Image (tube, rainbow, N blue to C red; front, side):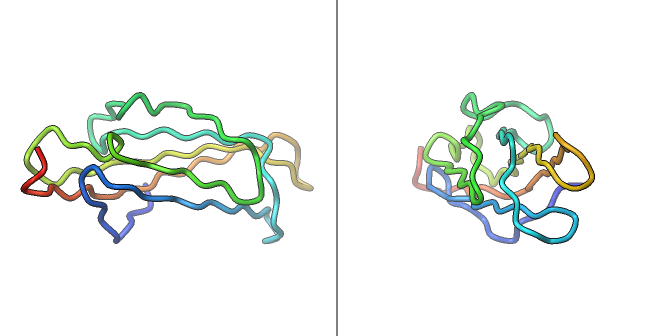
Length: 113
């Protein structure tokens, strides 16, 4: 089940999503790999060719969504999913996979066409 964000984002706007990582003991870790995808929430159509976008591993990773990532094709608010996947090393093993989805709403601005 996705994590539902309470903040909404305006159509054709910009938002930064910051990710930090911890192991099973709550200690900070740097992931070995990190990738993300952006889809509409229900049909799972890829938005703006944003699929499996790899980021350089770091202790904090920022996913920046802008303009076309928040473009709407209908005159209504639309839900989107930001899916992130990463692997990390801990005392439990190497290459441990993690995945998470974040559900958010893009607000339709009446005067954007």
